[in-house]
Image (cartoon, rainbow, N blue to C red):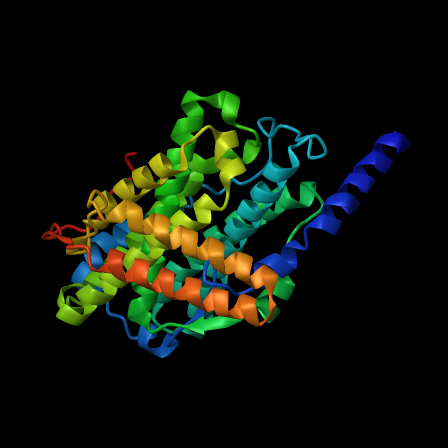
Length: 364
C-alpha cells in the first residue's frame, strides 16, 4: 500500500516538474485561448423581443439543466497509466487538456462577469446558465489533469491572465464560432471513437457527446443575440468582420491541431481530413445566422493553411533560437503568416440567405 502511494506521488512529482500547466494556461500567444472583457453596459441593453419565442424555448432548455449529473466520474472512468504513456503523446495530450480547460474557464469568467454586472433579466439569466456549464467543463478537465498531478490553478489564472477587450459584436462572432466549432470538434472525435474504441486512450472522450451538446446550445444563444440586431449580420462592414473571424478561427484551429501530431495519431485520425470535416460541420451550422461561408474546397484553401502552419513553426523555432538573428527570422515568418492569412481571407466566399428561424438542434 505504501509502495503504491510512493510510486503514485513520485509520478505526480515527475509530471509536475515537466509541466507547469498554470504557466501554460496563463501565457498569452496568438494560438492560446484568451480571456475577454467587453462593454457590459451595451450588452445589458440588448432587447430579445425580436427573437422572444425562440429565446424562451432555449432558456427553458438551459434551465432544465439536462447535463446536471453528467460531469462526474463513474464506473466508465478508466484508470490511466500516465507513467506508461508515450512521452510525446503525454506532452501533446496535456497541452490539449490545458488549452481546453483554459478555453472553457475563459467562457465561465466572461459569462459570470456579464451576469454580475447586468440588470437585464433575460441576459443575466442566459449568462448564469452558460457560466454554470463552462465551470463544470473546466472543472472536469482539471480533474483529469489533477490525476496526472498537473491541475491548473484556476483562481490564480483569473487574476494573472491578460484580458483582451472586444466590442460586443466581436464577442458575438468569436464566441459563437468558438462554441460551434467546439461542438463540431467534440462530436467528430466522439463519433470516430464510437466506431474505433481501440483508439480511446483516455476516458474523458466518453463524455464528449453531452459536453458538445452544451457547446451547441451556447452557440444557439449567440445566434439569437445576433438576430436581435439585423445590422450585425447584414451590413457590408460586418460581413467583412464575419469573414475575418471565420478565417481566423479556422486557420488557428489548423495550426494548433498540426502541432499535436502524436495526439491525433493516437486517436487514429488524419489531421487534414479531421480538420476539413470540422470546418464542413461548422460551416453547415453557421448557415443559421451568417450570410457568408468560407469556400473550404477552393484551390487556395489547403495550400495557404499549410503555409500558415509552416510560418508558425518557423516563428516558434526562431523564438527558441533567440538573439538578433532569431528576432529577424521571427519577423520574416510573421510576414509569411500574414501573407498566407491574406490569401485565405481573399478567397471568394459563398453567399447565402439565413433561414427565418435561427434555431437548430444537434444532429451530427
